[in-house]
Amino acid sequence: MIRTRVVPRDFRPGRSKSCRGFLIGKGDEDMKVKMCGMKNIESAKAAEAAGAAFIGFIFFRKSHRYVEPETAAAISEAVTGCKTVGVFVDEDPETVNRIAETIHLDYVQLHGHEDADYARQIDRPVIKAYRYGDGFSAEAANAFPAEIILLDSFRKGMAGGTGEAFAWREAAEEAVKVKKPLLIAGGIAADNVREAFHVFHPYGFDISGSLEENREKSPAKIRAFMDAIRQIES
Image (cartoon, rainbow, N blue to C red; front, side, top):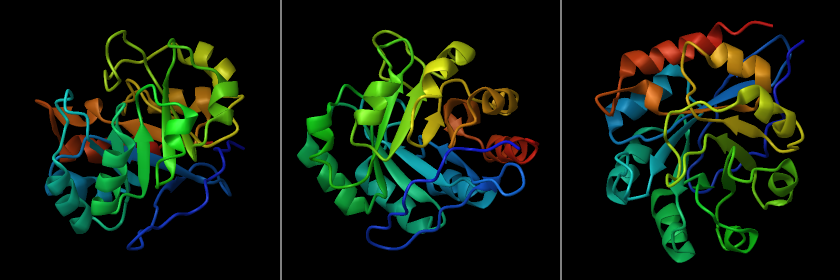
């Protein structure tokens, strides 16, 4: 039987939201999908309808997926069936907490070089991103004050969101030692998510670039990815 990693404790600041997912194997925990880089209500609604558990907003101005907090707030208000995640890169903690409170974020994702002391200043549960090839270790991930760990690809000079896959099987040797729920990112798409699942058996996947056409989320690609998730068999 294929089993995914344990689900973190539920957290519902502000208004309550469900957290959906798909069962992979009879009796197993839900497979979670986080669709990141949402910039409009249409795309977020498509993710919600397709069954995504999380939607993510990028609050890093150097990213083409950056969204103004006011826009993210409107999207979050319109989409109640997904947990919301704000992605920040080495931002001032007070700014992070202010945005999280304004939007009623469920999670804050730290995608820079934030340390444990920084994370303890954040008022929401933390998702900590690591880049494989940039000093990732399971020991550090387990010790970090985060609810969920995210493993992404590494490209020098970029914070993430490259859409590039990394050495999965090599990375899995270290990732299997992570004791917290693990999201896998970096080049995940409908045509390789089955392979990624069987390599990592993760809590879920974080996906963005492969859902896009001309740098905008495609409802058709969103549906196709979730169809691929449903087709993963034990």
